[in-house]
Length: 103
Image (cartoon, rainbow, N blue to C red; front, side, top):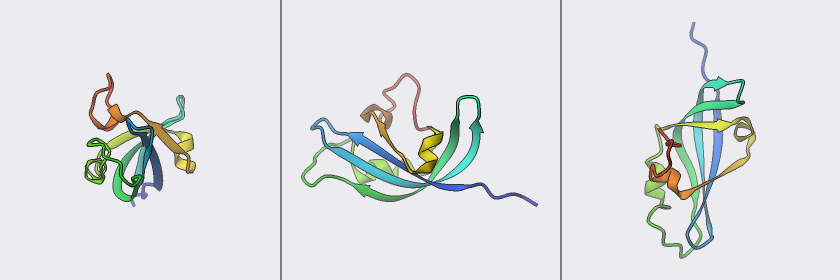
């Protein structure tokens, strides 16, 4: 008998070049953990909600760009599993970081 993997809600916030925040809420599946670092490996399943400030025109921070994260894996700290919104750099969406955040 296979045990089901926990389903959690993950929240992220990206700061635009204009200083405004775009937030997204995803349903995710916990696939594993690194207990030493207190990190969890999750797969983003469904984009549940996106909040984009009215009038914000940032080509990196669009609903389409965030929806493209569905199916990607991400490593998050333990507190993310308990509703904390994780502030992220815009570069996490472009792969512009030395180590990709979403894989």
